[in-house]
Length: 313
Image (cartoon, rainbow, N blue to C red):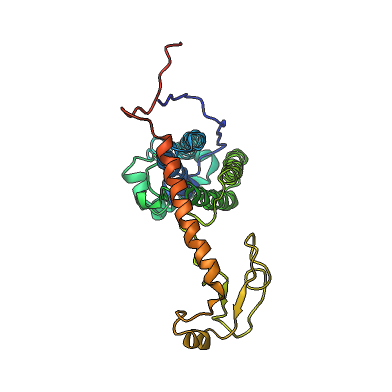
């Protein structure tokens, strides 16, 4: 049950109108890496996480709700940056606040033209308020959301989402010189970093969490690195030495074309992996049973009920 407080989580402030930057800031309102996308991603992921991970359900709902509060901060900032564009600015009143930061009618017309050119929907369809669209007027789309039903996959998606959002805020700060707006953007950027570490910590509590899902990787193909750009090639921990956390070494295939031909399209490989293959098949059965039992044991018997209400007030 959601409860809305009219006080923002962070006291967003704006020193002067800036409709052009307001349009740019729409990226974090209705854009692919914006706050609405983050809120809906974590909100939808939470449903599948409740059983058998009620603690992660709690975390995802908390962060999703905070993302909604960040959406409100971004929307409020956009609205404040548009101060004057619908009233005094349209009336061309020289005494309007926006005229105080511009140099005459020509400058006023230029800023209106810039805002309209960047995204005409911004001031025509919404009367100057934030819409669920990005800075180019492209409507928000549910395809931005990554919710795969496997909590380890979802948490890794969230790490990437927070990373992208952090970079967007970092870039946005380059396009405004308003100290109050920069302060708000810095707060929002920092919370992306905080959420990243929350998701990282949550992922670490789920063991094993690699590979994602239930089935294990086929040991015949796990270690091979195909050198498919042979000119001026580089070696590093991604193709030589021990694989991270695997206890195995990479197999660098210097001549992939010949290797594929000799092995009949990777179907005729040495039998030295036979024992590992048997172990993998046994582990697949074991993991399938464990994961299935984990989910079934967390589901209540009889009538399904999402919440348990307390009579205490």
